[in-house]
Length: 307
Image 1 (cartoon, one colour):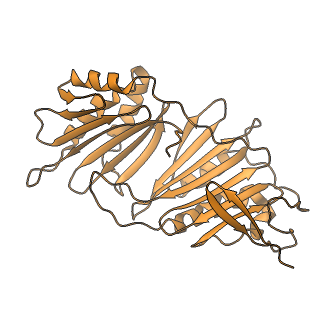
Image 2 (cartoon, rainbow, N blue to C red):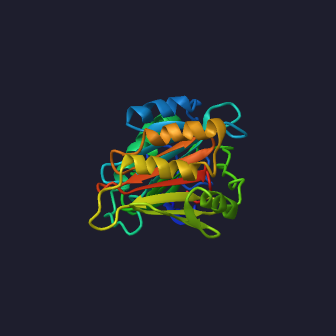
Image 3 (cartoon, rainbow, N blue to C red):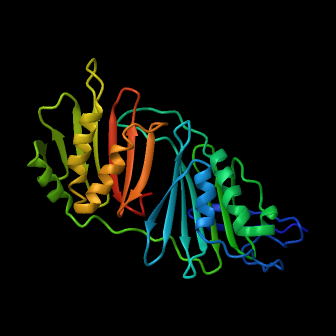
């Protein structure tokens, strides 16, 4: 007899199906008879992800250790995998998210395929986490929203063409931590940038005497700057972006943190598929670049609730 159940997870309604292989029903409240898979250190998940083209970072070291892996698909889809560990250092919570392509102020990009890359990651991380129970997971595909309880924990899927997610939460797993706001007040950051040749108000600035349209904005959780060419003018140069990115980065980082973040930015001025992100010294950095040379840097604290 097929037992159907539904649970609300992450704002979606997930309909649960039935697992094969004698594992029992898939409703999260049901007990399972199969033993949980052996514990998996987080590094045993990041290594195969890196082999699939992800760049992985030590996002947070305490109180909960979090590693994050990022990849941009050829169609611009942004793929994020976050791995939180328990007190024993083993992977306890894995969150996978595919988001639409990033753009710059009015740039229109067609939506990408979010389902296929998440399906790939589900296999890469699911097999080692779940062991023999992996075979009992429902197929990850378009229009599938569901939650399944196994001996290891709860697996949830949300699969839609433009945005897709998956979560593997082991029994007793911590919640994914979120970072704090910037320590510096947004108005103070804007005022400081105003002393470096910008025209500023309480939360935004424009570049003076620039051959490009340069704009910066500040909030408690996000700082961003963009440089766009004017119609008919020359494309934005790498040198211009380095200068503008550095000006804004100084408002949220200093010392070794600034040096490390600046080094990362300098090495990622022209992302292969138009977008790249990474975590450096407590900051999440995201760079967008168009074929015309227009560029944008967005800086947020790591693990903010907005992502």
